Length: 138
Image (cartoon, rainbow, N blue to C red; front, side, top):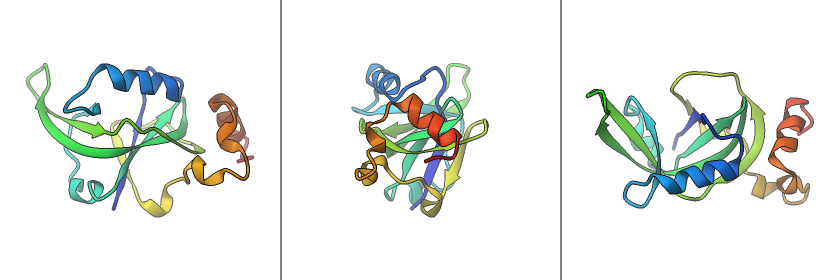
């Protein structure tokens, strides 16, 4: 199994991302546009997720449901990354900007916040979780 990381542009919160995912849909799924089909798509489809970076912080993930080859408006080939509606908050991690997407090995992926219920971190507002992560406190 393998995951992907991609920046979110134009959304500052998980709620904004969830709203965006409801507007444009393909085959009942939200999607993210990218230029190239991942070469390791089969490994990703074996349970991989799309980890999302907002405002310099890796903050959530969405399970990947599939990939679809498309033709972009400029006539060039492109790919849609189809994701489920489930948006899972993860332990925040600072990330530098990058273009496109990156692969993420399961051992390097941050833990889901749902697994941290004893600490109560999942109940903190996203901006506070981001600030605590930036300070290295969580």
